[in-house]
Image (cartoon, rainbow, N blue to C red; front, side, top):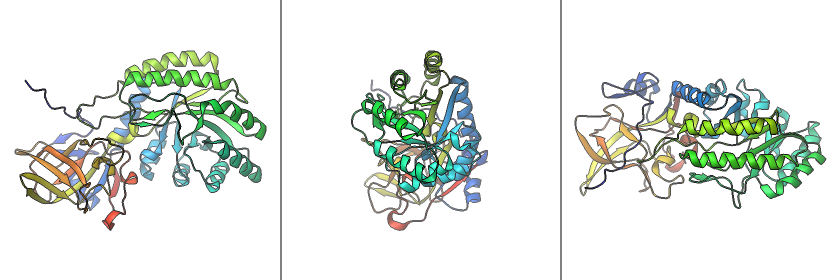
Length: 411
């Protein structure tokens, strides 16, 4: 007997009523009329709020939760998240401006990323946020700019650890990396921070992203805490912040299972019990992006044509990789796999077919679904790519072939 083909994990964030997907409590067909165009991204604020509440229920109460807005920098989304989380992490001067428009205390905004310009550094220092220093050179430039402005820069050291997050989608630490300062170089940098008179806040230690294995996250957290204890011995003062990064993943592809958040929380409770007497007063931060907003978003496009080619059915839409590079398989996938995709206005459908969903671009890479089991769709029907709240429109080549831009709406 052959094994059953792996299926996508059950996705329950958007209900189905009368065979039509509901987003933000509104039928998809009505939502499309409200937006006034396809393609568009729709984000459900209730789903984001529920995800934060779920995290609060499992994490230690004294662990702070920060939103990594690179996952979804739509200003309305950032404003909503600012009312739910304890801080925001930005990765550019543009993101910094959006974050500063929220009610978030600037001291709870951090700025990470290699290659910060002098203008970026000056803006961040003047705003009074915390800089995550990515190199010794960036440290020296920040010090010089702070001296010129008459402001002592508030800084974390971003550490490139001597380990990686196993089974992660992207390795952000371990080995040679453009991110952070190699752990073995950090003690000398900490001494230099003291000499320069920078206002030392703590450490940012981020080893990987998009991980669904609780055991891997638990191991990374254990090693992160141990590394922080060692590095704190050379710090100019006791760290006020220990940002242990994120890495919590969401299921995208067939056969993937959800992260066991309860197991991760249990491990963190134990580690916090070890930290409190050793680094009294140090605030531990978990910085999450995709995990907070990824499942709360959907990408919606419209079928403009259906065509058969040598026995293969194609649904041609007005959307594609120029709006959603990740779903096309061209944003980090080694072997292309399908995101969860449905015909949004006939989710189950009376008649099913195997079809591929493609966009209007003149490239075979423009593929949103490859030979998926879908309800039979006709021109005018709405195709929905789920798990699309993170790394969607801003991670895609929107200008490619000069097609119209996608809209965004927060419900």
